Image 1 (cartoon, one colour):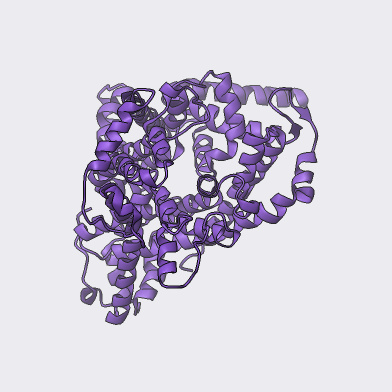
Image 2 (cartoon, one colour):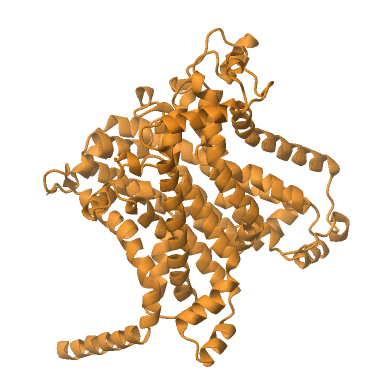
Length: 290
Length: 310
């Protein structure tokens, strides 16, 4: 990936500086607009209560305080179900769901990318087609299936559908196909390695960027799960659900709600920051041929 | 004659079975994922299509009613025809293409920035997609009373006299939803474009310059875009799917139903009949229609994109 871009002179293409200035100011402007809600959330999470009653309200905090975070933790400890339970639920489903998704999706992707067998094309076509519609469309039959499988009020309702998320499979399959050379796999087979060893010892280490991408996508999905129609028991509900309850508390709770929001987004954003270059590398093979 | 045919079929079936047995390892690799995929994705689509031809309320077994649900949907459901279809297509027609172009523009601009700046901007633009609840801040920014930031500013400068009920007023709902959707639309599409751009080898640009490419727009159209066609396809699929599926944001911000169905989308209509009224057969017809619209638009756009750079 490391590559030095040619300067415009070397490329020999004429560009006016005026257009450059216009376009980069647009970029900057868009960046600022995109950042507003984040600045807003961070700033609110540090505001003392009195600053919420300014008229007109201000975007930035004047006397930052950590009181909102303290309030948030106090509210948490007062809740009916111990708050640690919500945290456990979210961490549990995120870890199990992500690990399972990575394992199942890469196994399937390996076969689809590197084996030739009847039905492989059809399977991949079904997966690509499923990228073209949203899961919510089929919520009614899904509900029937979930209740038949006794997944209502069960961690499985969060985890099982996440295991077979299709975007992850698509990305890792494309990456394997283009980044893992057949010759290396073939020579390992010649040496007598079983297919499972070929998969774990040779293919998987070569697709680390794709694995990190699946990790990011899967954590992002599972960590942010809020209320679910399949979960009614309070002690099975997620952190995001509990925190969004706080967010509906009106202006007096605005600070605490902002603190909750800030805490929630730390995990997925940190993961993205650390895996960003790997994700971009994975996306380089994401393309679709007709 | 038919005997001969039978023998042919039998022979090819036997051959297929042999093929399958030979490849059993491949099937074992696929099985865990694919079985779950069938249960949670394919089966629901099939059931939805089946149920769309029935009358079904979950308690009693479904009764076959033919095309009745579709007839009702197209000819007598005024909320669907007058509100849901219009809003869905209006939102999709703006969020899809504009979001797509914003992603392309941003990726194109970022591509020439130094690495650190590029990573910083990528984070800023992608963050709304990964930070789950962040769109809730819009409820504060566009709050109903004079404490809402936008209302406060407008009142301060004397543009309005009394606060606007942003998410309850029919005049503003759809526009706001579009803005918020655009704001969260810079997702996988954008990342895919960034990667596509970085993968274009420099010698293509050099060759282009020799062949008479004169400015950045020609460079974009004749070299950059054709070289990243597969990413453009993938991005289009992700954008279209997102743009037609707008629904839960409307429910979260404007309620279900929104005032006078002002921001009602097909997705909301589906929610309304499925989760509130329990008319499952009818809701399934809505779902099937939305499914067909999504797949159909994708097919259409793919055909259009295959002509880029010609």
